[in-house]
Each structure stands twice: as C-alpha cells, then as structure tokens.
Image 1: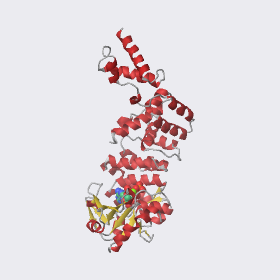
Image 2: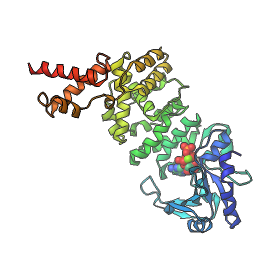
Image 3: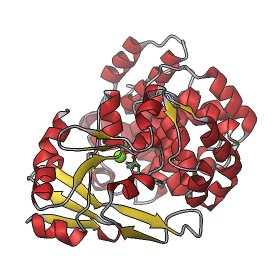
Image 4: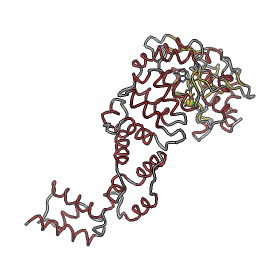
Length: 401
Ligand code: ATP
Ligand code: MG
C-alpha cells in the first residue's frame, strides 16, 4: 500500500466510523496495481455530501452538484482529498455530460458508470480490491475494455473514445475488440464534444510512452477525422517515424514536435486556434517550431529563443538521431551579455534625457534601441552606459546628416 493511500486512511476510517462505506477508486487504484506513480487519490463513499460535511470540520464544496466535497484533512495540499458520493449518471441526451446525477448508497452502481474496467476498481481500507468487471484480468492482459456494453457507453459520452486511446497510449495497452469496434462506429459523435475536452485527452496521448500505439488507434478508429485540421497521410508518416522511447519534457515541446512532423510548413497559429488553446500556449509552441527550423545556433537566435527552448529542440533532434553540440550552446550562452532587453544598461528614457535635441519619443527611438540591443547581443558593443551612449550618439549624428 503506497504512502498516498496510507496518508489518506484516517479520512476513510472516519467515514466508516460514522456508519458509511468509503473506498479508494479510479485511476489511483489502477496505477497502484500497475506499480506506477499515482497523482490524485480519489475517494468514493456512500455518505451524501451533506453527511460528509457533517463529519469533517474543514471542507470545501468543489463540485457538490456532482457529489464531490474536498476534505481538508491537513494544511498541505497533499492532505486535501476529493470525496465523492456514489452516484449514477443518466440521460445523456447530447452524447456528452449527463443531464443529472443521482446519489446512491451502492458501490457497484457507482463502479458501473465508470468508463473502462481498469478504471472501475475500488480498494477498501484493508487493501482488498473490489473488481466487479474483471478489470484485474484486463490489467494483466494489458487491455482497455469498456464497462458494460461498449456501444452504449460511447453513445452516452463520446469523450470516452478519446479517453480509450489516451489510456492505450499512457499505459501502452491494446483495445479490446468489441470496445474498438464501438469506438469506430461512434467516432462521428466526437463532433459533439467540446474541443477543449478533446484537447486534454489528446495532449496526454502525445506525451505518453505509448504515443505510437495511441496514434495508430486514432487512425484505425477513424476518430482522426473529427479532430480539427487532422489529415490521414501526414499522421501515418508521423506515426511511422516516431521514436518509441522518447519522453517529452513539456506539452509545448510535444505539440511543437507533433506539428513540425505533421507538416513542416504548418502555420501553428492557424492550426492551434482551431483547437481553442490559450494564445500563450500557441505562442510558445510557434516559437519552439521556429527554433526547430533553424539550421544552427548563434548568438542572435539563442537570444531570441532562449536557452531553455534551444535545449528542448536539441533534445528532440537527439531523439531523431541527429548530432547536437551541447557545448556550443553553453559557450554561446556564456558569451551573451544580455538575455533580455531589460538588462540593457540604458533605457529609452535615458536616451531622451541625454540627447533632448537629437531624439524625441516615437518610432525612431524604438529603432535606435533595437539597433543597440542587436549590437550588444552580437557582442559588437559593450553593455555599459559609456559605450551605449557613445554608440547612440554616433547613430543619431549619422542619421542627422
Ligand atoms: P489519470 O491518471 O490520467 O488522472 P484517471 O483514471 O484518474 O486517469 P480521471 O480523468 O482523473 O482519470 O478520472 C477519474 C476516474 O473517473 C476514472 O478512473 C474513471 O473511473 C472515471 N471517469 C472519468 N471520466 C469519465 C468518463 N468520461 N466516463 C466514465 N467515467 C469516467
Ligand atoms: Mg485522475
């Protein structure tokens, strides 16, 4: 039993002392059984939200309409637990979220609404695993299988199609036949699912160990047709060329690698706007892609992209079997006098005060600062007030002639 569970035990025990049932459920039980690191511990209970709030002095209503109460068992975030009442979900009229949830007292009802057998375990305080749908066998045979009738489950919530391939990717599991056939026949329902929710799953898919497998499920199921901007041929090529063992360091790195391989001439802004991701994310991915297209590193592009981005790109190149010169990057970085405009020893304001007759606020001032910045970056000019003013004065007099 992992520390994350033993730490949470008092919470379960307290609920049980009050006469209710309580179990660990969801992804954490699956990950413990697989010996993988767990991130969030989910607790399910027969107690209703109001009953949980009566048991624990410190709680927050984080999603009470879904039956979830956050129990603050201690000061640190690690001691905050999501406790969710057993529930069923009903009437998915629009192929996505349920119209309403009903709280129930029976654990099995709660496990039945879960997506896949390996996500539908419960684990009691004594460590006993409750496995109503043969999830243990699927786990040992490394298989994703829908709980109940796959057709119905994807019809209820088409996001589960994305989740199936995301788990295939993160666990490197295959997809059980009937589940796969249902994914294929229900893929068109993905067009009803918000792109933000699809992004969350696909983002996890492309960063996981089984990326290659995840993409092949995406293509074979036909689900790719419902993802914005996707085309089959480039996906095929990308999937073939993927290096199976690479671990991405960030979502931005994974998307940049995905997009340049998908289409070297792709416009990241146009592509990612269709995925409705935040502008800041688009900017970061686009910048990494630009860096990826550079042939070699020098002072000017190191300054532009920053050391971190360049290391992320070299990382990708190395994975592709290309040689990279890490020492060169370190050397260039040491040679850079500034890493940001703000490190320049003079400002626009300084220039205006020093040369009131030669320059006024406006675009000319911006141009002058740019050329100062460029010369400092290229080490043609020393970054100290004397040299910078001297350079500025020369430029201004030159322009006056
Ligand atoms: P991760 O390790 O990535 O967090 P997870 O299995 O914990 O994986 P979550 O999205 O955190 O996945 O969901 C927690 C649990 O809730 C799942 O294990 C599953 O039992 C259930 N669940 C989540 N989303 C759905 C869904 N769309 N349909 C049915 N059950 C779901
Ligand atoms: Mg989770």
